[in-house]
Image 1: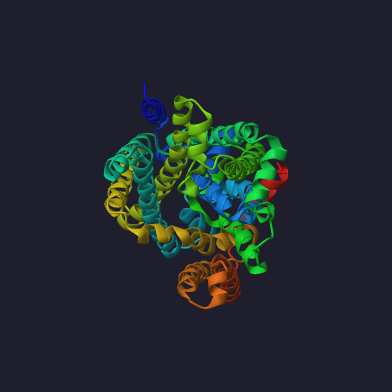
Image 2: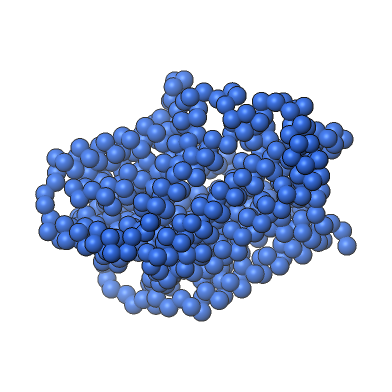
Length: 497
């Protein structure tokens, strides 16, 4: 059999496994909480790997190795910032959000938590935040579909549209039927695939390039600066890279996992698993790039082509075609895990945060689950329509979507969890200012704006405005005080440290 046949077999096995998991989760999904939040019953390992896989996407296996291959270890500062941000997110936000979201009327989405936490009777906060999630994640899902189509086009020479249909069809199928459980369970498989692939490629590559000393020597022959963390870096550049970590506090598709973990004890274990997975995966991605530099220096007759394909090319060189096929599946897994996570959060925003408010009539859980599935289908069709033509503006949007969510929601989540005096108008004002700052900052041509990542001004302006407006509009609410105190009591009874 040809190499491509082995690779197609591996991808077929992977796709079939994802669909089977979707069917299994479908059988376990009974009510809306099951569909949107897995019944708040995720274990530590599932919660940790699901959050990690939803977070990293194809950037982990292609973007980061490609950047380090070209620019050296100075590009690793973003990874350092992400690890710091993810750890702080798990340590401070995860345990408190798990408890507080349950105390506040068993909130199952971020917009519903903010509304219930602040006792917003106007429903405006929930509508605005739900609309932001719906709009931006629809484009985000679309960009993932574009990545899936490009993957099949570049890896197998298939038509872009056929690749888009294959990836979208499988993701939509298991997300639509299995909901949050299917997304979480598939994330576990996808997270493990990504992890193993990023460990195996550099581990085998080290031997192929002469061990640690031989690899380092070859890299130095290309450019000694590639092994330096500071060469070519500016202070603003390093600060901007590390500031990526600020985004974690406001990413709905990541922090919703914290709400779904079963107990505080599981949250603590999930933190350890999740951060270990993340650190080892990021080190594997960096090592893959460095091994690639050494390998292609030692084999000048080989041409890498696109630096972002260094992981895929090395996998095809070092392993049997069937194993290389599973390496390709790991890249696809990174893309699909993020699409599915964003789909379920967008569906929940549409049903839980917009439909329920707009139509106000009570429906049964079965009807709400059906609506959730219908929402997944509608959002997927819209995203697919946007992705049908490879529109660069969609991909450009993703460049600052992380900053947009981080600046709009991050400070509000932190204030809602740790500060009694946050008000509805403070949250709304901060949300608008944070999102607007990111958009405006990104459009500026001034040198300081170009060099400074937009999440920094967006995050801190959101924080400042939310605090000032809250202090001006604050009125003591006994129910808010009671729930805040109850959350602190529960946290102290079973500390997450």
